[in-house]
Length: 208
Image (cartoon, rainbow, N blue to C red; front, side, top):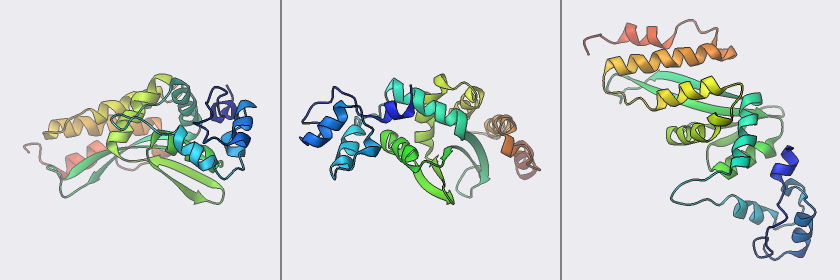
């Protein structure tokens, strides 16, 4: 299924959902993409399309499959353990998810339909959608990991890290070990001089 079809307006949208605009309705029935709509109400339609249950975010199976394809091809699932003075053992574990594209509209669609993360210009015509909130990353991984073909292992490792409730050094080291395993699967992280496990062992007493 093409990205244009997935991002397009489905033919069974009713007139009231499309704001009662005859021009937009006709374009929708012809299967035209929302990105091509020039009408001033197209942004209103986008907002209506991306409304979710306020009690719990919902993503369609089609959107999950499409978004996981973007993550497989142009994305990354990253782990980071950094010093943090407010944490019990002086470190916090973070999982980040990002997708990079030259097409800003696709990334904006990802942000709108998930209500997660932010889209920013990296350089030139390259844009990035990044999800940093840990509650959001956990839910996004629940949605996308079953559909991942290339980064399925990374998705499962990241989910394991997010599910660790760090109450002692042993659990922190377990998270660090999983973070090192995840980073080893990411090409850009393979050149790190020091791994997370070593960093923690050098800064924390095993008796803590």
